[in-house]
Image (tube, helix red, strand yellow):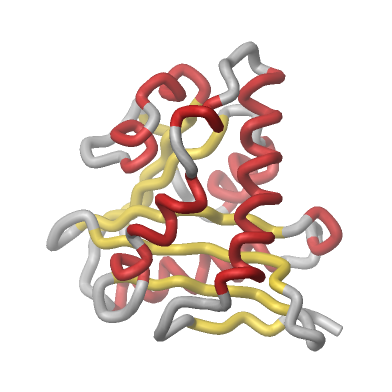
Length: 173
């Protein structure tokens, strides 16, 4: 059975979200290290940072979509945060490896694109680890263009040492 994608109107269950984010960050950190980068996990708790900015992902300011199985297990997520009156930033797209190839990642991106349009945004930006070939391929298929960077990039503000290991994208809505 395919997972159900839910728009969160309040913060999701913390234990299940922390488990999903932990798996996501572990994978991204490993890819950064494999590229020759330093493990950034000692520089601050990325999961705690997610919870500190949770309000920016809740309507009307942003969007957080969670994909879950029938038994309630979180298997994917994606968030949208408003940067200013016209721009938004996609953050934390993750689909558990067991669910890859099912169209779940595409659905999580498309829902956020549609939400951004409804919110009146005209551009979306996203960054990803350069070794994250799954996400890079998906963004290219959906019409995102690769760019050199963007003002207001949350990852660049939080962990500027990761910039050499990131690829940036933009789409005009």
